[in-house]
Image (tube, rainbow, N blue to C red; front, side, top):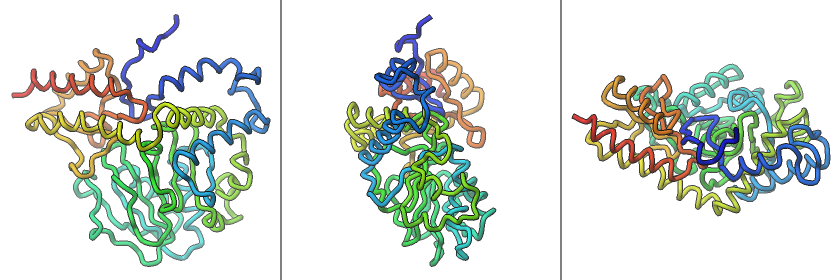
Length: 369
């Protein structure tokens, strides 16, 4: 049986997340044999000229969309953000004899902190645990080290639904950003960062490929004593071919960059659309007279993950059940926060968010006391 686009549900999963339909259609069209190649992307060797073109196309697409300066390397790795939590301090902290500053704004920031502490001295520049990570720090709350090896932030916390709304200025130390859940969702000033990493399965591609954008001078910190795969310099020297890379994932990343450029019109237009989508849901929350209660404080709300609670668990269960019957799926919030989480990444169509908005209003009308 052939599945059609009209049979697809609105998938609000936090990841692996929805991909653009034109990208899926291109994959479907070319999966048996890439044009002019005669083999599937799943079959061709990573050192062939054909894959070399795919690799360079993906890198070019990222460099163009993000205006990545020439003194930054683009690496395609594996292991997701979990591996990066270890690789960042292994490469940038080990042997530095100075601390890493970690800004802990949610669950993923906690995990980055925990792994950094295995490698060296860590200074917790701020931790939002006291209010269950419902906001970001104000500038006067940050306790940054004067000589930090690097400062680490998580640009968007998928679980709590808080997001830095612009590129933060956190001093002169290299700024390291886990951008896994808002990478390619908006323009950023890459030159303000020393290193940006993102697992692809939110906005940039499928699970299995991780993108690292690193300033070249930081590669000098990668020590030869590191295991080869865990050394950024190894991957930079081999142009992401140190080992067999995630070839299919890189191919899809290239298609996503083409979609963002050709069909969306670039990252500024993507951000404008993401703002519209998020506001549709936040308006319902704010107008519900407390029936829906947002987790994040208003000024720090995420455009990617809209998190909120209903009056009680029984009502939340009814909400989730009814939404799924109306083809709105994967809305259950993370266990540490509970409630509802609507992940509305780049590829979530406006129609899907409008359907959820209408359902939220109708459900509130029936259940609010």
